[in-house]
Length: 212
Image 1: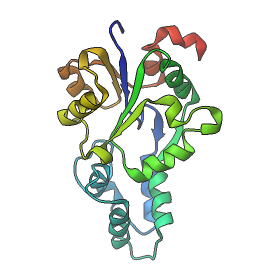
Image 2: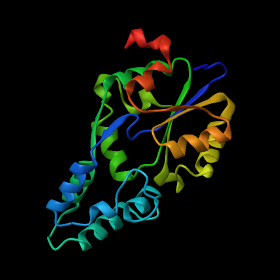
Image 3: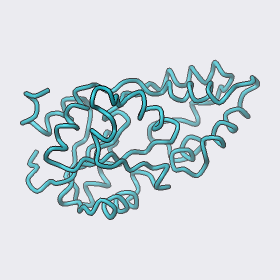
């Protein structure tokens, strides 16, 4: 990919950086007596309880209370958070090494459809400060759907982050695993990388491969 003129990198979080395990998440909720979780959660969902949490139209406490109402068991906030966070797996350290290195040349931003429960968990457990991979080591700023009350693939979230970052589509690269998100960014004039595996992520920056 020709990165001439690129000054800004906007990178997705789920799948592109952190691996996800929806089956484990659903099983965790089922053990709490919440049986219809499959109808509420998915990577491309645009409605329902989890979408409301991601767009910040409900608070984490409202989310937990709604989950409790779906179970015939007495379940705590911690049990609900643990079940929800079981959706998250690990981040390949090579990705974090690359992000940190890229910040020497580019401004690097996270642009993610996510929620406060997941993000707070990942900030502590997935980005390891003691290993030099804290969020502030990897990103200039994080743009999060639950804070912006906007979500991909809507054009509005891209416009909002471009304004805030002082960037243009023409001087920006967008990396995401979701084809609809990629399509919106491409129509707006971003350079795009459609992520399918770690090689897609690393090979965009071929000059860095030998350092990883």
